[in-house]
Length: 245
Ligand SMILES: C[S@@+](CC[C@H](N)C(=O)[O-])C[C@H]1O[C@@H](n2cnc3c(N)ncnc32)[C@H](O)[C@@H]1O
Image (cartoon, rainbow, N blue to C red; front, side, top):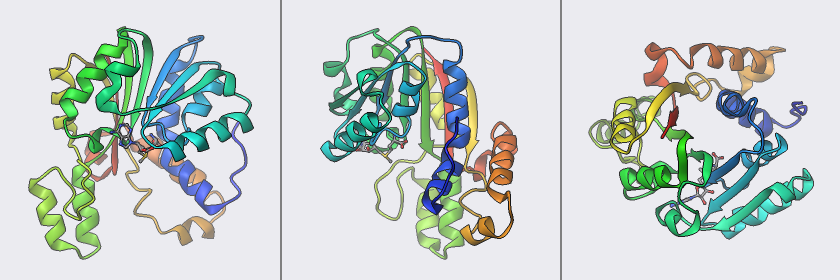
């Protein structure tokens, strides 16, 4: 059951993750005791919820602070017996996780941080069992161009048009849906769903969400309604892709 969202940050987080969480939990629906790997799972926002559904989750993340927070969160929610945190890197996954041993990999907001996205996807393919699934969440380039331009950063927007790396110097790689689908095909994945995430959420000022009762639920409903519509994909801050290997 959803817990009440008391604080503005929690509400914002819920808007940002609701559609992705629904797709991930639908993937797991009806399956029991799945072996889930959350690569770059950070403080366990998703991992803990997956463990609460009864699955076993390994979180691999290079940050000791994130892993400590994961540990605390897992204990608070009483799922520490179903979650293991391991310090490590997506690029070095082969050394940490046995080949063909995972039913579902979550790779959310991490692929854009590695030097070689294609090699990283190939590594994920190796740790998945045959027919295993991937939930991949990345930043979407067209929306970042729009956001830079709307903020008056026209040179950054222009730079981002032609190059996949953020012109603001953050170093994160952003993808178009076509690039992502090509990379996934090249590494042996079959894409089943592509969703646009945060099509409107980042554009709506927080003050508007406080003005009208039910505004947050209405925005989440709208995000859900447009997620699968290709015509809205270019304004989505993120792309969420489900694929099998
Ligand atoms: C933006 S956070 C995303 C956290 C979580 N996946 C989520 O969606 O809420 C990025 C996470 O990736 C981790 N990270 C950064 N570089 C990584 C790498 N090369 N391999 C694996 N994880 C990495 C960071 O420590 C951080 O926890």
